[in-house]
Length: 376
Image (tube, rainbow, N blue to C red; front, side, top):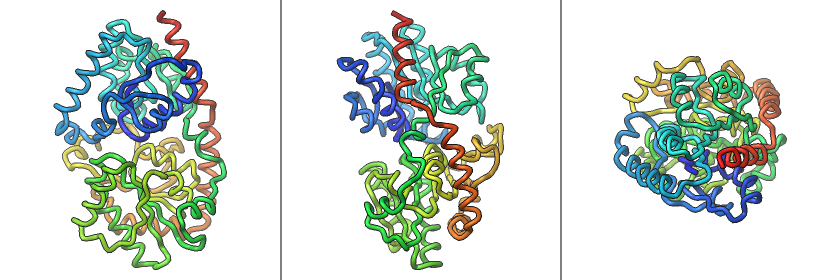
């Protein structure tokens, strides 16, 4: 298995929770994170080696990433595993899957690349790479079946992990936060490249909110020790180290549950915030050259998963030049102070939660076992 970032580790961990009891003696190895390790997964390389986002940012790390893929491919071609499962990270996994599938190794990909949002032509490459696709949104299954690619809708694991009714008081107690404070959780991203481009603007927005209302408290969950150190360095360099921040290690779900609103980088975390029924502002910054290329590749007007699933702008999106500290602060201020909007979002996100619920651990594990059986 290969998972390239924290969200992939979470998804893969859920799959392994269903698979490990059925294959208790199996060697499960590759690239993953702590959630996968809980189920006896063995890491051959650290996951953060793959946690790079943006076309030009990836190019800067291309030699190292390509070297890892080459070594892993060689090991797998010699080992001939019963199945290879690529978890998200399509730019890394699909090329690897093509070579493994050509060698007779069954390949599964967990979470469809967003071919319905951009780069739809990749479905031809996916057909070459993937023996079976696991999809997490209901509308995706038919897209793959129409293209002749076996697919199973497994529901979204986050919909099972996150409770339908989040416990706000318990979350605040766990983090030592007062019940009557206005809590803004800030999530600039788990990748180093995301922290590089998002941190200054995100914490600049937090500073404006704290100056506007002294009762505002800012919580920032960190994905790991490397991310924490880099984040602190960036905050100091930006001259924002006077902004009162509560940094917490991990516990992102607790930080979201405790919040009145969330400023979140575009990605899987936006869906987590929606499942916690929280008002949010989605924002993102990247290298300018990457932005100029990527902004012309989309098929639809939305970037954030909650808006894509709703098929409308239910929450604000601020990207690149629009993602200024002032714009983010103003959008968050409205989210925090508009009671009617909060009620409407809670209902929309509750409906979304129900639509994504399924026993993903067991459904996905069963699909893995059937694929292995089919190729024996």
